[in-house]
Length: 298
View (tube, helix red, strand yellow):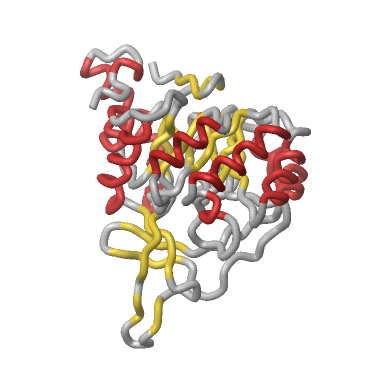
């Protein structure tokens, strides 16, 4: 009932663990059956390993969390040698989230992944928490077109581009990514935000601003997913504050082919299983045979 085709790759269901919230699945394995997920988007990986940002990295807000991790990761090469074998023990689709400080980082990372049997690279041009690269590629049409074009020249994988809600014109960036050859789009990454420690009279984060996620961003994310869905012909994967099955159905109705769950994993490590079951129950109760019947109906 929930089987989903994402740019030619078959998923058993549309529920994917969002990058940066699920690591490589190891920490969640004791709490849920990883085989039940449609997919797992890995922790954001770069060609060279990164230590991440200094100072506080997580801050809870009234209806969400802020993070400033700074793409801490062991490198693409280390992932292939040490983490990919673990992930291949499970049936869920492995999606590699690939970031970079510059175009060479992106290209070299993609070249290393050519020697693996993964099907989808999620090209991260939207991380707000690194000082170089990351979101800088995703907020301008020209740079987004450039990085996608260069990756398509060297990679045979399906390229899903993760868009930034902080872009100057998100719809134009999306259409430029499609023109450059993107096979799918995912959105939204976190919103650039600010938290202040009034007793220290300083920003909470060393980087001053950080990425905001969680239920507080859902209505904005839904609007952005719909806007992009109406403007492109490639699949859209929606995310942003999905906490339960009803939220996931909303994103499908806004135009999502699949959905990613992030912040909710920190509150309830079994939430994605509950979302899958809740989506099935909704469809049975409403007499819906497949998700295409309700995709993009708003």
